Length: 171
Image (tube, rainbow, N blue to C red; front, side, top):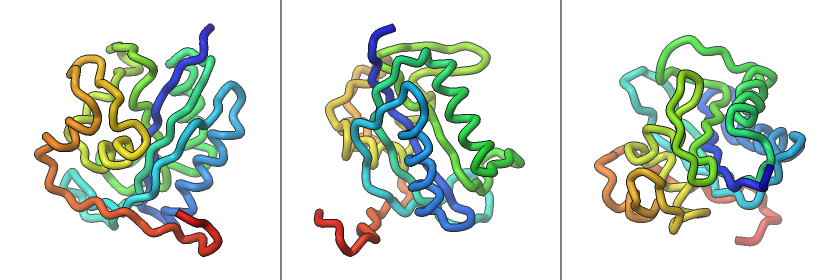
């Protein structure tokens, strides 16, 4: 199978969200048949969906993989379980959330997986980190770049870049 470029959204708002996201990225990078190409900054984001909860930390990563999309999703769901995620309520608080956003230009809609992720264009907390690492990526069904989708988004939630917590890191 050829190398495919895919994008994964990462989020957390329980425990220590930044550490949870960092740990998830480390676990993804050590997974077989997955290579991280680029990582977006971390963003503090306002929760959506009406559930009372703390703010999230969100990011996105670009990966290269040989795994079929269903297998990649399975790896992500397993990592969520290993890290302690429990699914209680839709849009509720979560220790870690790993969403397969894009898998090459694949358009897929079946019982287990919809690609691209169906809510990308409605979520500034996804579009903002995605625009940092792939602003010119064209959404295969909407035929618009990530940058354009972000500019056209009607999402008014707050998304703020978190300054790098590592004092030895130079931006």
